[in-house]
Length: 88
Image (tube, rainbow, N blue to C red; front, side, top):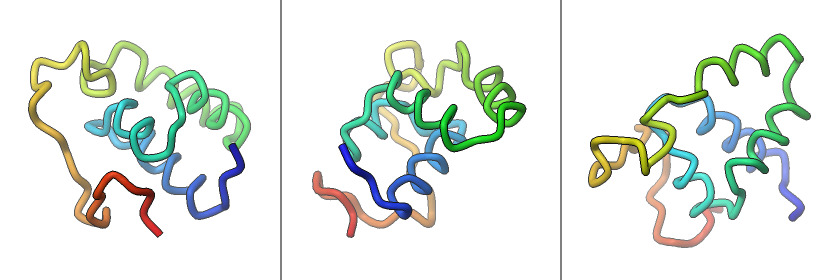
């Protein structure tokens, strides 16, 4: 999958957000958690990547299956309405 710079920036932003689960990234951009990790490793400095991995590892809000609030979905105030299609 070829992503433009805008999509890549948005995925990185969503990955850093504490309450945006990897499932939301997958549904919007079609990238699995493993693919997001590969992207973050490629796009970030090594120290920033290590800090991010430490931050999200085991975090229940990043993994919908582990989250006690599975019915709730956080939406960033800067995020446009998503209707199942990729935001353009």
